[in-house]
Image (cartoon, rainbow over all chains, first blue to last red; front, side, top):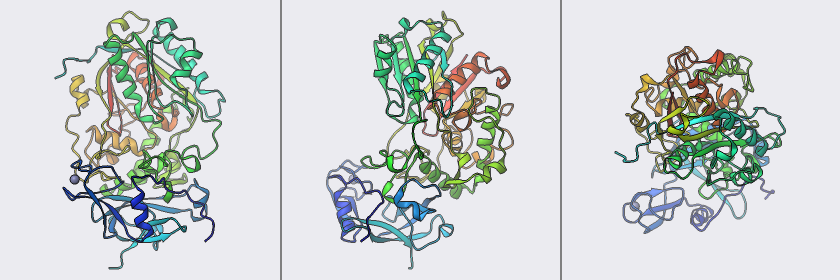
Length: 137
Length: 391
Ligand SMILES: [Zn+2]
């Protein structure tokens, strides 16, 4: 694998299970055992009911594009060759929104509300990112 | 209601600034010293009478209160500082008002100072994006793993969301920077004074789409300061007091995203139809929208002006795109905004230069850009905080 030049995530004890699940090609988030809320980013407790009883639950990996931007100015060396590149906010069917890149679509074809599904992108031996592509089904 | 009613109990007694520029090659403490001295002089106060200071932003780009104070030979009874974001201007003034009312200080300098001459581009975002490396992400939606970086990208995300939800577009957004540039042309302190048109805006390069270069504010050097004291004391000073009539603090939590109002659906916000109702700042000041002679807002990006207008109920969600057309927010219009030229054209002084301009407008000191008969001016921001000032 070529040297990975893009920024790496800040992994903390709180979000470690999220990144571990992506390495196994699963999208898991915390789900409250008391009120069934699913949330992101990882929090020490359910933001709705403050229960600390939660489970890292597998999600559908499906959602829709709620907003997006296209970077025309270089900021990171690792992204320079991909300019103009998109960054999208995807609202998962389970509720939380995730920042991501959309793949398999031209930037000018991105539309608000379009259905997308997760793609597990193994960018290094230790790091897998959740990117999203237009849904086929 | 509060037993501690602060309406008109405190005032801005003095306002001052340093020069603003893109290559001043002066340090933040140097710039702060000039702004503080000018503000004290404006108030007719000596430095020995200054016993409080609240700074926003601070190092490494700005100057911290604990370095400014000893270098200027001050003797402070009380100081405080907010972290390196531009959102705290009103908060600093509000806390200063409470301090002087509580007798914790007599005169509090509230200021921000910074210098970006020495920083290479990009000045925000990119490899130096410590903001994005914060636990749980950056304050403007930064997530560098996906290349999401810089405050402007968060504003672009809001702009796209707004465009899609309400059917607005970049060409309509141009009316904001075009209006503020017209104001800057009348302001000798402004950095960018050459007029621009909607077509210039549309021809300017895309930075983070849908935002263009002319949707972005300046990055520059400069400092500005206001002196807060009790209304009673201000009446005995050199210039007429500018009373602090209304205050609204910064709201926070799950329904807030810095550049958005609740319900728009950015970050983890719910999606619903936002209703501004009567925002608390108007109740405190005892005024309505009709009484507001000018509106000032934190315009780091053009879209923030639309968000602020809707957040405070000057128009309904989705209507700011139309509201800002046809000169309505220009001098001579129904609601002049950022008559100094704002962060977009006068310069980015962390919101402090806006406070200085408000003070000068309410004293009738603004020359060719004076709003005739200005009596009530509001500072109101996309993130929900506000001040109402009167003369
Ligand atoms: Zn819960």
